[in-house]
Length: 134
Image 1 (tube, rainbow, N blue to C red):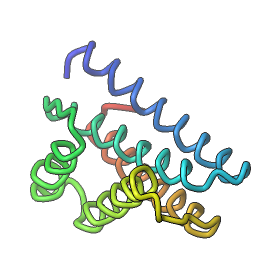
Image 2: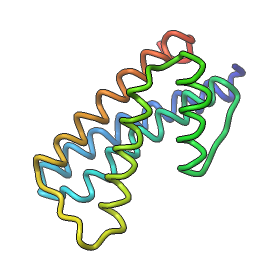
Image 3: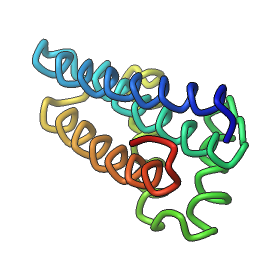
Image 4: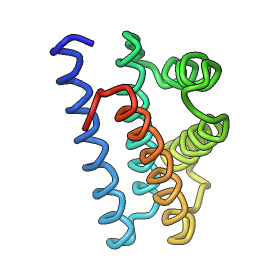
């Protein structure tokens, strides 16, 4: 991985931390719907960082999800449960952002935060394994 790519990976990992902290603050402020959206973006950013270590750039949400499955899970870098977790976070974000009838409770928002933290922890472990982060 070249220096420019390594720098982008570092930036995305830092942004992931910001998204997780923002999610917590949004929950504390009672903004549960928006918190679900930010939890997904933590997973999205970490996934794009992991894909960069393989030289893959995907911008669309569907492309990032496909890359997660094809390049990280099917190749044995990550367990299948993380594909399911990403899909759950993405669906929750889409419902929160686009479905006017969706009601998000504090419990649901806290669960999405927990899911995102679990997902990010595993992807950060992968990034350490491939020496993309320390």
